[in-house]
Image (cartoon, rainbow, N blue to C red; front, side, top):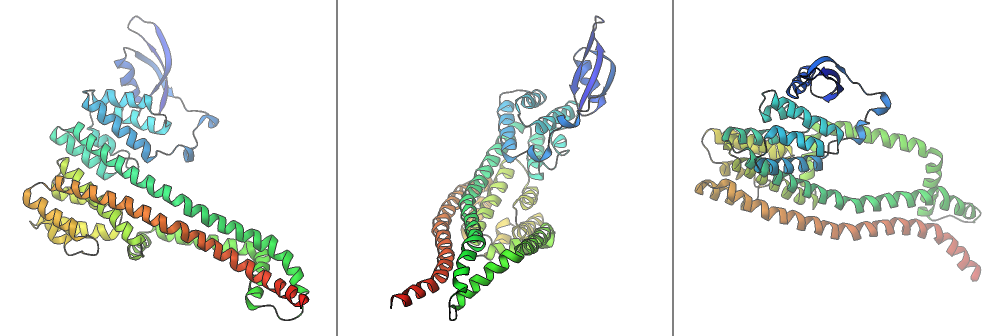
Amino acid sequence: MKFKYQARTKRGESRVGTVEAVSKEAAISLLQKSGLYVTKLESASAPLYAKEVKIFSKISTRDLVIFSRQLAIMSNSGVSLIDALRTLSVQTKNIPFRRKILKLADYVEGGESFSKALSHFPKIFDLFYIGMVKSGEASGTLSESLSYLSDHLEREYYIKSQVKGAMIYPALVISVVFVVLGVMMFYVVPHISEVLKGMTGQLPFMTRVILNFSYLTRKWGWLGIIIFGVIVFCFYTYMKTEEGKGKWEQISLKLPVIGSFLKKVYVSRFAENLSVLISGGLPIVQALHLAADTVGNSSYRTAILKARDRTRKGEQVSVTLMEYPELFPPILVQMVQTGERTGKLGKTLKNVVEFYQKEVEISLKNMLKILEPALIIFLALIVGTIVAFILLPLYQIQLGATF
C-alpha cells in the first residue's frame, strides 16, 4: 500500500513524497528510521486507469523459483533477511509480487519470524514452503533450508514445464482436427451435396450420415456449442469439488500409459518432498504430514497420512508403504527400509528421486513418440473417411458414365 507523506528533517527542512508499507504505522516507522518526522500521512490510491489488471499480473511458479534462489544466495552470503527482501523487491519485475515482498520485509522488521510473515500469503507460499522455513529458523540453518527449497522448486518447475511443453503439440493437432471438420461441414460438404441431390438411386449409408450431420451442424450448430459449453462448465465445476477431484485422481491412475506416467510423477514428488523436509531438519511425522499435503493426489495423500499416524505410534514408514503396492513400487519401499535401518532416510530418498526423475523424462518422451503419430493417423482417418464417402458416389457416377 502506498502512502503520501509530508515530513520534516532534524534540521527542520520540509520533505514530501510517497512510501510503500503494510499499514500507516509501518510507514511512519520506516520514515522515522530515515530520520524524518511525519506531519501528514494519507493513502495514495491510484486512479482507475493506473491500476494493474490482475489477470495479467499473476505470481507465477517461475517468480517464486527466482525469488527463492536469490534469497538463498543472499542469505548464504551473510546479507540480513530484511535487507535481502528489500533488495529483491527492487529487482522483482512483477509488481504485485514486489509489493508482497515489501510486506514480508515490513512484517519481519516489525518483529515477526520469516515463517510467520510467509503465512500471511498462503496463495503464494504453501505449507511445505512455510514448514521448511520454520524448520530452518528453529535449527539456525535458514540459509540451508532456503537452498533446499530453491533446488526443490527448480526441479518441480522443470518437470511442470516439460509436461506443459509436451501438451502443446497434441493440443495443436486436436485444434487442427476441429478446424478441418468445421471447414468441411460448413463449406465443402454443402457444395458437394447439391451435386449429390441430383443423383438417381440410393446414396451410400455413410454418405447420407455425413450429409445429414453437415446439415444439422449448419442449422443447429449454435445449440450444440451451447450444450457442449454447459457440459464442460458442469464438469469443470464438479472437478473443483473434493468429491469430483478425488474421483478423477483415482480414475487417472488407472488409465493406460497415462496412469503409469502419473504414478512415477507422484512417487518422485513424494520422495523428493520427504527428502527435502527431512534434510531440512523436520521430524519424520511432520515431514510426512507436509509431504501428504503437497503430493497432489488423494490416493497417495491417504496412504501417506496413514503412514504418518502409524509412525507416530512407533511403526516404520516402509511397513505402511508396503501395504499399497499399486501406489508405491518395491524399489521405493526397499530404499525407505534401507534409509530407516541406516538412519540416512533423507540421503537414501535423494537417490530414489534421481532415478524417478529420469524415469519421468523417459516416459514423457516415449508418450510423445506414441502420441504424435497416433494423432496424425487420427486426423488422416477422419478427413479421409469424410472425403472417401463424399467422393465415392461421384466416382460411381463417372464410372457408370464411362461404361
